[in-house]
Image 1 (tube, helix red, strand yellow):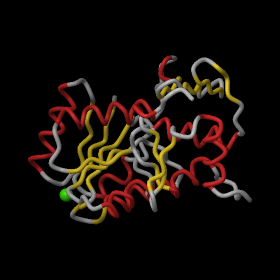
Image 2: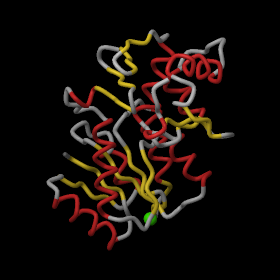
Image 3: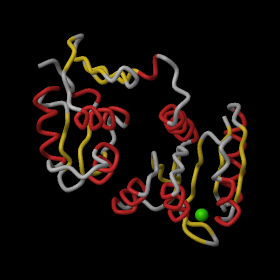
Length: 223
Ligand code: CA
């Protein structure tokens, strides 16, 4: 895979490049926003790893520009900024995941694999999302609970898909609304979630008060 690494720290950049190359990735390492901006539009890229504090600007500005122009390249943010607000800002700006420095190399590689899987290049098996007894077929647009097909409305399906893609990680209200309810809708997110809960089981989707919702892998039990 071809990975664009945007990181101004020499030591970290060098270490990351080496470890990514060691597992077979091609790495394009850039240290300034201005240098990274044109490369991030390169269609041969498979993912980007983005530092937030860059000498000539904020990584998050790059990310917002990408998403505004419709660039869906998978992006993993790596940063020392670890407040909840900063993490939510990063995710709301369109990051696929967020890793706090210092991090373990193995964790970076695992998160990157997950981000790459979501970014396309899905194998047949990976188009099937599963959490507990629930399976969601992204291509067939069907959801089964313990083998039984559920009948979901399009918005419910999109919400469930978004939550299952990011299982064990909180999706903010804004993320869910922009992913699953792009058209203005007379019903609120909470109404759709409550309808969805009636269909998939009331304990599957957990509310994170003031933030959003999450599906936890281990909590799904058969109703
Ligand atoms: Ca930096």
